[in-house]
Each structure stands twice: as structure tokens, then as C-alpha cells.
Image 1: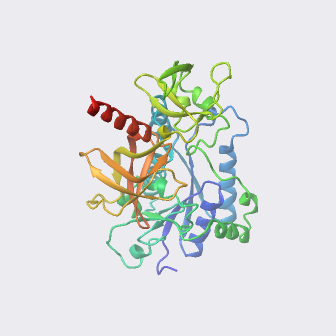
Image 2: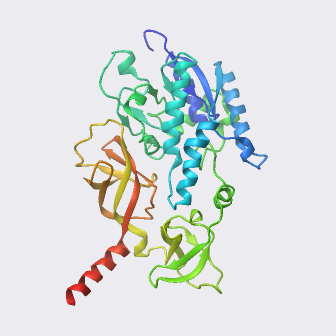
Image 3: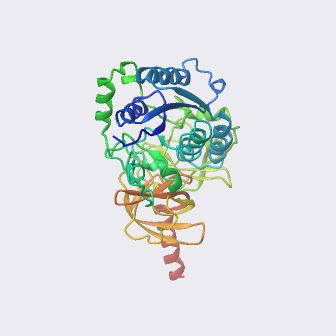
Amino acid sequence: MFRKIKRVVCAISGGIDSSVSAYILQKKGFEVTGVYMNNWDLLEDDDSNCSRNKDEEDAMYVCDKLGIKLYKLDCVKIYWNKIFVDMLENYKNGRTVVPDVMCNKLIKFDELHRFSKEKLGINLVATGHYAQNSLGNFLEKVLENNCSEKARLLRAVDPVKDQTYFLASLKEEQLRRSMFPIGNLLKSDVRRIASDIGLTKILNKNESMGICFVGKKKNFNNFLSNYIESNVGNMIEIESNKIITQHNGIHNFTIGKRVRLPTHIYQCYEGLFVSKVDSSTNTVYVCRGSNHSSLYSKSFILHNNTFINNNINDFSNLKCLVQRNHPPVQCQLTQLNDQLLQINLKYYLKSLANGQFCVFYNNNECLGGGEIFSSTSLFEEINKLHEKKVNECC
């Protein structure tokens, strides 16, 4: 309990994580105000069962249950212009981006913070993310002790639900205003609390999946086709370098994705998998089998790099995370110039794609990250060695 009642805005999505966050804040003695963010235009969805209206209803239900006032923040325009359009452009260029990263940076931790301060006069903002703040998940060090140390982003107690990967593009000044009430809880603890306080209506609600605020689409390629025109190009088998068929757009293909072709076009008992996408020639390269050397990389270059605290000079003893559900791996960083970082791993990772976000950790602290600009596959390494030996022999 804090000595003086503090006002805090809590983002309310209609799910149990944000709802329990609001409840915990109340128990801690905060005066809580809820904000529901509307970021996707329902007219873009033909599905009459779209969950966005349902989410807003659930947010109202939660706030009514907890006795807190709920405001609605409309971010449709900024979401469309700065996040969704950018995602489409990246897919058109064969880049597999993670829109949730920018969604957090520009909307949940920027637009929401601005709205809270300018419209509601509240400087503190809480979300239902599984993450922790070095200043305290309720900013105890600042509110109780007026601490001036830098805020650092720490991994959540629940290793499965940890969401620091998606928060790695935040800046220190955003963290200084941010609370993570469930960061020290397991998901099972959150569900138990939701049950104990009677949030039965949303207890078994499906968790939000897929693209930030858009949701998970049954057929993602069909969804993209509503916004990206077909662009016919060649599909090439990477070892023989022979054209086997044509595709209708590189935006439909991501590294590691299985490609199913009619047997009269191509037969392969191991299956065909996307191993490379070349936007300059509008070409999709495929390999035979899911363990082909062209699917593995341990060297790649990052751009659009950002660090939470802008004073990271020591790149030793760091680990990186490219695929969120995998454990971080040891890495070696080399600064190529002001914009590019070279990453070398001890082991090969599978299905690295341009545009993916790579996040850096020092023990439990999330430092920041960058987007994959290019990578070198094991297949390319082998070919270069072979060419070198041939040239030496000649």
C-alpha cells in the first residue's frame, strides 16, 4: 500500500490478463481508470463474428465488475498508417516482420501514454504484459523512494508467457511510466485470481493471437490478398537452380513454409519448403526436405537497431532471441557501421527470415533488438567453400 493514493491508467482489452492487472492495482491502493483501445476498422472484416465488438463488450463488463471508469481510445488511423501499411509493404518485399513490436512502441506505450497524460491527467500507465520493470512492477522505487536510476526491462516470472520480445523496441522514458502488475505471476496464478473475483464471463475466453489488434486469420494468404495484388514470379528448386513452376506473389511465402504442388508439376517425397525469397527478382526458392542446409543460418546482419537504454557499449556475454518460443542463444556482435550489426551464433538456427526481430538479453534483462536485414545460410556457406576449393585447384 502506497502512502498516497496514486492514479493510474490500465489498458483493458477484455481479456483476463489486463482485467487481473486492473484488479491487482486496486488491491495495491491505486485509483484505476480503464482505457479500451480500438485500433482496427471493423469494416475491413467481412466476418460477422469478428471479436473486436465482443472485446469492447468484455472490457465494459470487467470495468463494471471492478467499479472503474472506462474510456475508449480510437487509434484506427495511426494503426493503419504507421503499422498495418508498413507490414503490407514489408510482405510485398518478402520480409517477415513482427507488427506487434511496433504496435507496442507506437500505440500501447506512446498513444495510450499521451492520451492518459493529456486527456486524463494521469502519468502512470499499466498493461497486462508478462514483463517486469527494474523500478518495480508498480514503480515502487520511483513512487516511494523517488529513485532516479534508469528503468530496465526484465523478463517475466513465467518463462512461457514472457513478452519482453515484443517490448524490446521501447525506450527508457516509456518504461519509467509503465507498470506490469502480473509480471511476477504465472499464467495459472492469473487464471486463479480471475476465477476468485468472479470474472467468469471471460475466464475461458480465447487468448488474443495473430497480428496485433487484427487477430488470427484462418487463411492469412487470403487476408493479405485483400490488400496486396498478385505478382507472378518463378519458383526455383535451390540445388538445381531450375524453374519448377510459378507463384502469384512473394508475400504468400515465408522461410520454412511447406509448399504443396500438384504431383504432375513436381514430385518430392520429402516435401518442398521455402528456403529463400528474392524480392529483386520476385523469385521464391524452395528446397527438398525440412532439414535442408538452406534452411539453417548462424550468421546474419541487423538494421533498424534500437536499445532501451542508449548506452550499450559492451556486446560481450549477450544472448539473442529470434523466435520468441525458443530459448535465447549465445551470440557475438560486431558493429559494422552506425546502422548495421553483424551477429554470429555458436549454433545454427532454422528458418531465419529477413524482417524478423532479433532481441538481445543480458541474463534476465532485455536490452533491445533489431530487424534481420540479411542472413547467410549453411547451403551458401558450403557453396562458397566449394567454389574456393575449385579456384585454389585451378
